[in-house]
Amino acid sequence: MTLASRLALPERRHEAGNALFHATLIGLLAARLSHLAFHASAYAASPWSIVDLRDGGWHATTGPVAGTLWLVWRGWKLQVLRRPLGLGYLAGVLVWTAGTLATQLPRESRWPEVALADLATGRPATLAQAAAGRPAVVNLWATWCGPCRAEMPVLAAAQQRNGDIAIVFANQGERADVVHSWLAREGLELRDVLLDDRSALGPLVGSRALPTTLFYDAQGRLVDAHVGVLSAASLDARLQRLRDSR
Image (cartoon, rainbow, N blue to C red; front, top):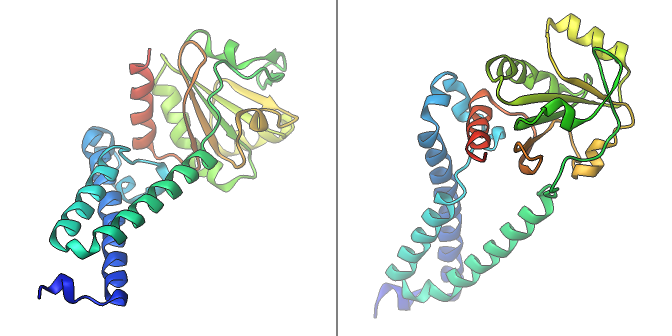
C-alpha cells in the first residue's frame, strides 16, 4: 500500500490545503520576481522599492503559471490529492476572477467629461486639453490624503523627466487657496494641476479611494489604472507600457 493510499480523509485535506497555500506563495513570488526582472533598470535607481508591494508590480502571467505547475507536480506525486487539489484550484480561480472584476475600474473609451478648472489661471479646463494629444497620467489626489502626499514627489519628478507624456494632477474637492498653500509649503512646482471642486471625476471612473492614478493613451482610452501609492520604479514601468501602446 502506497503512502498516498494510506492517507486518511483529514490528512488529505491537510495536505491539499498545504499544497494550495504553497502554490499561492510560489505564484506571488514568481509574479513579483518576473516583474522585477522585466523592469530591472527602473528598480536599480530605487532598490528599496523592490519590497514595496503597494505599487502593484506583479507579472500577471508568470504567477498563475508557476502556481499551477506546483499543483500539477503535487497531484502527480500524490494521486489521491488530485480531486481536492482540482476543486481547490477551481475555487481559487473563481475567487481571483471575482475579486479582480470587483476592484477593476471601468474601461472608458474616451476621456470623462468633467468640468475642471486650471489652478494656475482659474480658467475652465478638460483632461483632453491638458493631454494635448499626448498619452496622459491622471492622478486623483487631495492635500489631506497621506498616501497622496507620499507619492507626490515621485509624480512631480516624473513630470519633469517625461515631456512626451502629460502628467495631470486632478485635485478632488479642495479650494484653490488650499492647494496653492500646500504646494508652496512642500516646494512642489507642478504643471497641469486641475481642480475638480465637486469631486465628480472619481465616481465617473469608478474610483473609491485616493490616490487613484489613471493611464490614458494618446486617443484618450483608459489602458491602465492603479489605486494606492506608486513607487518610482512601478510608475516608470507603466509609463513605458503607455509609450508602447501608441
